[in-house]
Amino acid sequence: LRKVRPEVVGIGSSAGGPQAMTELLSSLPSDFPGCILVVQHLPRGFAPPFAEFLRAGSSRPVHIAEAGQKLVEGQILLAPDDAHLVVENKGYVGLSQAAPVQGHRPSVDTLLHSLARSYGSSAVGVILSGIGSDGTAGLSAIREAGGLTFAQTGDSCAVNGMPRSASESGAAMFCQDPKTIAESLRHYFAKEKGSDGSR
Image (cartoon, rainbow, N blue to C red; front, side):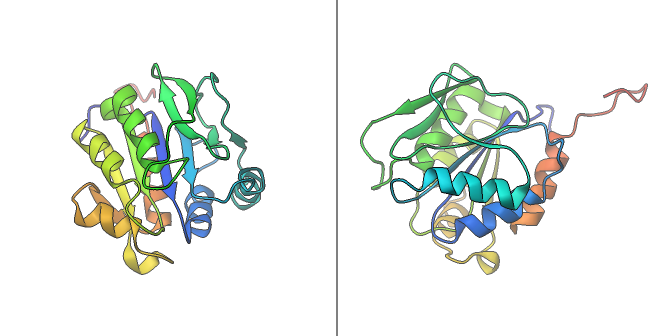
């Protein structure tokens, strides 16, 4: 039982991630309250078409993140081309041109570390299909801060590199397929009903 209601979700993926990402996002209810930030390893120039792909697959608004914008409930923000996506001052987007991490900019680790720092136990991290181990350290930071952490199951992955790293390291609390991750997110983000039935 958790006393802290989550506020923000960071999702990271690489090879095989677009299909898993669409499956997860399309399984969330239209009124899902959490703000979702996405890092997908892409060649330069592919962020805008990937945003369109996610919009078409999930029927939800997806925007390229811009520096300084405020996080709001229900939005999905995608890391832009060739910039690290971070959250600053608990609620505002930051973009960084710092060196690539494990060869990646944007880096999943960079995003998840920033969520652990800014949101602590109200942060959620999710690692989907991909090559390598990007995201494992950041996911571990969220878990250590008291947040929730998920990795995609190996049998549902196109490429079980990043999820396996997150699972075997102990960074992931739960290993689930994308649709089940969506169900878990819906459960944890649901406000507890008061004794009078209010939310």
